[in-house]
Length: 147
Image (cartoon, rainbow, N blue to C red; front, side, top):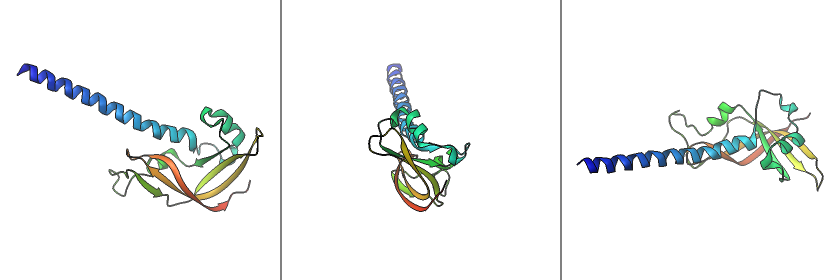
């Protein structure tokens, strides 16, 4: 009897460790999304510059174009939440209700500088299996933002 309890205890401990690793691996996609696309509203939108953003982020250095979204962290975190705040959309596509500010950076030919375009867009996000945004799926521009 004691040996079967030890086996069940060991199996339960291994299961808990496996669950912890699984949760942490899912958080990587959420963290990676935020690291690559998020612009904090703690600064003015016009203060963000493509040349600086693309150089500062190691993962973006070799990319010729990229898109950033200007939205509060709280709003991104809750995009995949349904009307019942306890439920999350999993492996689903969700359009945001209100247009968001988007900064698109595009490198011209082989130059080291980036051109910028700023606009209001409706954005469709993908909610991963863990119920958090992991990528931008589509967008529809509403109007450009002039500097």
